Image (cartoon, rainbow, N blue to C red; front, top):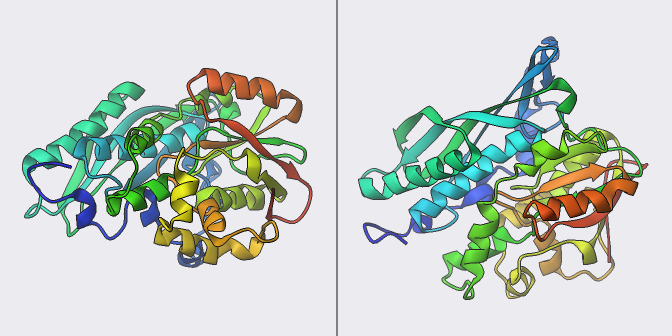
Amino acid sequence: MDAAGPRLTELAHGGGCGCKLAPSVLQQLLGNSTIASPFAQLLVGNEMADDAAVWQIDDNTCIIATTDFFMPVVDDPHDFGRIAATNAISDIYAMGGRPILALAILGMPISKLAPETIARILDGGAAVCAEAGIPIAGGHSIDSVEPIYGLAVIGICHPDQVRRNSGARAGDALILTKGLGVGIYSAAIKKNALPDGCYEEMIGTTTLLNRIGAELAADPDVHALTDVTGFGILGHGLEMARASGLSLVLNLSNIPFLLQAEALAEQGFITGASGRNWASYGADVALPSGLPDWQRLLLADPQTSGGLLVACRPEKAEALLDRIRGAGYSLARIVGAVLPGEPKITVVP
């Protein structure tokens, strides 16, 4: 928390990727939008709810473009900036690209926050961009009711290395690179109930760049990528299932969680976004009989700067998992499989 003003999380009605519109609302808003298919160079647009737009420049180069911003998920301004920047850059990695520059998006209640506090948010974002090897080359700012920060990010990749969420194949294994529970931790932060040591764990995972995505995209055994953010693993898993025209099975016992996520969820530290998420897509999810509500909502928990969901050739999954863990994603696990069938998710014990 910054000494120069109120807690950042007190100034926002939501935080992190939990601020996202519910999947059903977003689908309704975009349902009548103009179809971009007449543009042959647009390889990825809105049609598959993918992580970023991809425009092919020539036979060797694609431009990847994304934007992501939200309200504070933590109270420390520098950490807020770091988390928001890491989350925004993740969309580039999730498409198989390498980021090259960013633009800052800033909306702040100027009458409530000291300039020094806002500067620390910007410094946090700049620090992550420096770690990713890119500049913040400009941006835009407004005086807003709630604090908002994020980035628009541009990346590049070879056309052969674009990884859509629609590329999953029947028989593929599914790997998740980070643990779930960021929304649970943020709910506990708002109530001053986060256990000792958990804040450091949360910052560690939410500021860990998903740069492994660019490396995985160079491997032909990796067929699809998406990052798990505000719609939870169920929501983003369903996006992959629907885009690929296949069914996903998730093994509950294999899904990694942050250390106290399950205990806190059972105690009731659930974000409102979890309920909105489930209401949007629960009809397409089959759960084990008798699964308690807290565990169901944990699977719908909105992740801020979450990990990548990777669909890959099954016989290569263990080797890829070792590679991912060796790159610093210690909680990575093989969490399920892709099967033929109508697009849905089945969760098994």
